[in-house]
Length: 428
Image (cartoon, rainbow, N blue to C red; front, side):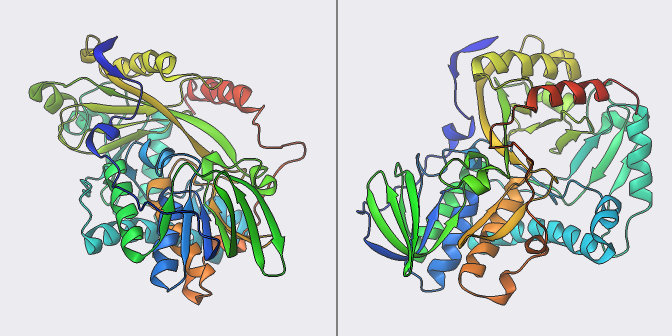
């Protein structure tokens, strides 16, 4: 099942070592303190540092240790609720604005990578969103045919009889192509953002956990594992790792483990048969699978939710491999070279959120679509901390919900996953 040189860490870490950070002591005072050195925090830091604010980014682990380097490297328009679901809840104008933010996040990510010259295997490859049953195919076809004017995405359908042109499997009932979606090496992308934040003048200190935040008349006093720092403004950029440091925010995000494996090298002929194009792939299951070829097309990177409770990568890896082989039986004897997991943050309305809570700026809750949206909203919250009008988003207008008795530990996760798996087994 595992290769002799198997690693319990992300495949991406083999390819992209983090750049050397500044050897700096914790400053006594900064204009902006950012807690969390993933995509959100670093994009915020680029904005504030380039805006001539003395900026410090701290992280409890090594910068990028969390899901910014643990994801599957799929870049989409990010918005999970349909336009019509949002229209019913918020009205037509807000639904349009929210979906526009999703389009903007995809555009922003590509533009940033190109404009800043980042070397991170970014490519607009398109997504094949596979229908796991016939009812879901019809639902996809209807949505593709009736796109909202102004939100057209160029999507088109691939019927089951033509599926092998996109994916060498009979496990699906066709699907939809979203041609503007992209892929990226997530760790290389993070490395590039970190470098740009350092170039802008931000200080970044890893292994520096924030332990307590006190508000005072001059701003904030933050106790860390390396001492106390005073800041005029604080940005919380912890997403799936949001904890008791910010209990109000902790009650509003649901940490969910997402598990990923990389296969050992696959022969070119077999890769061309199974994944003839460099598409990123997802499916219509509630308990979704997502996968893609590695940037050099040597391996398949395969992820999903495979456990009712959180488990370690040595246990989740074989489960993911079984799911992979259900789609591609040809990979039965292909071993796992890497297995890892990370925490994404879902929300009760399946929308991302940004704003100010009790004086603390925040952006989080990307619902598994954070590769593009985390950077985009990180940029926006950095602009908001600068007081810039262009930092405002439609997400600022939406209430960040919680639920009674929820304190940040998702006791309801296991029964929810069982329920959704049951739904996935039905042709609905």
